[in-house]
Image 1 (cartoon, rainbow, N blue to C red):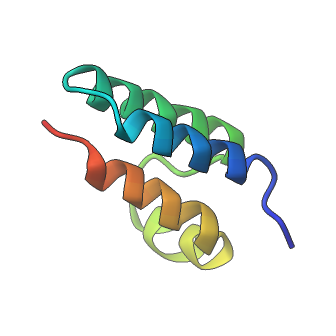
Image 2: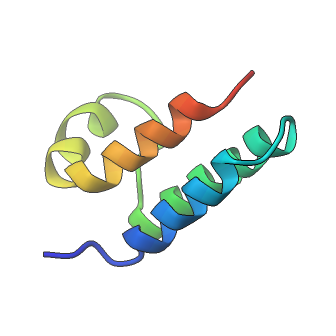
Length: 72
């Protein structure tokens, strides 16, 4: 089953990943916020790490990849 909008989010990630800092990290944060809104990703806590991740592995794989790509 294809996850709605996931290919578009993946394309956005690839485009943003080529940008220079600090724009890159700011846009990655916006991408994460957009994913949270579309997929109702829990903001924190055990739910995100367990139940939601188990039920949405493709979404969470990209979400974590975006998160790890940011620079602080």
